[in-house]
Image (cartoon, rainbow, N blue to C red; front, side, top):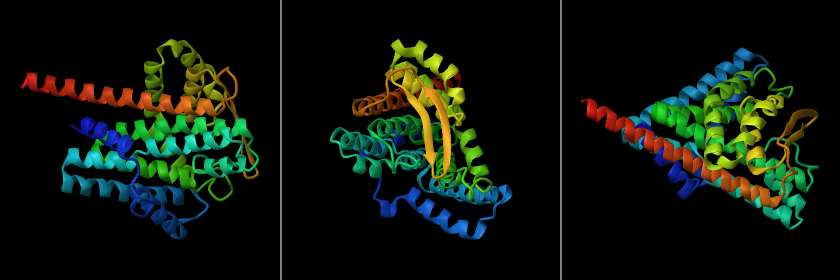
Amino acid sequence: MSALGAAAGVLVDELAGEPPGWCHPVAGYGTAMARLERLTYRDRRWAGALHLLAGVGAAAAAGWLLGRLLGRTGATVAAVAVASSGRMLDAEALAVADHVRKGELELARDRVRSLVGRDTSRLDAGELCRAAVESVAENLVDAVIAPLWWGAIAGPVGALGHRAVNTSDAMIGHLDDRYRHFGWAAARADDVANYLPARAAVAAVCAVRPHRVAHVFAAVRHDAPAHPSPNGGVIEAAFAAALGIRLGGTNRYGNRVEQRGVLGAGDPPGPTDVERAVRLRRQASAATTLAAVVTSTVASRLRRSRS
């Protein structure tokens, strides 16, 4: 039943969106971990690993307690709904596209900071749209399929544990001077936690864009390895190929320059492509959620037939 609960949790997020910021559990987790960092920070990998374990352990304990209070299925629905954020992130990406379309580049640069960690101060219209599309692609994995995946496998403990890993990576999994060592464990844990969900996301993209399957496979195979992320590269390449656009390139993070390779073979994205990426994200999410429901239903019937 965890798969059905996880699917229901994704549906709740798609329909209702995020709770208010003042009572959002993920925001509260981020605040707590920022305060904990004042005590745990050392410029060492072991310190970052202990910091991560404390956060994930607290999140897993919260999931266990939620299961005791609501039952496994109800707790899974609640946990996955909290851990998912597809609707909210879509809205942010569409707002960026709207500002670009109106020529309001400064407003677009301010808005896109809620989606990406790169330096946005000098991004032009095309780079702003690229940032928004890449964020939509990665959020299909981080904010939809991975919470569903881990919720289906491990219930509320899995869903909240994954959200803790992903949030910790967003906070400290950087390559700057402060976090190069302290954030290493969070970055590697996020790579592991999202490895299979990222490949499931590529399969979902293929399922809803069957006429682009050959292009998606080619981009994932040939373009994604140039991307520094083992998961971001495959899903961004899949989106680029499915949409017939070009992503990747050079990103700046303060004084650090990161080369992400060229993903896809089309033109650079514009505002309309951001909207197309959001539609693709929603369709791929729906396909994955439906697959979870069907799989759970079939498995349940097989168990009953054997008993």
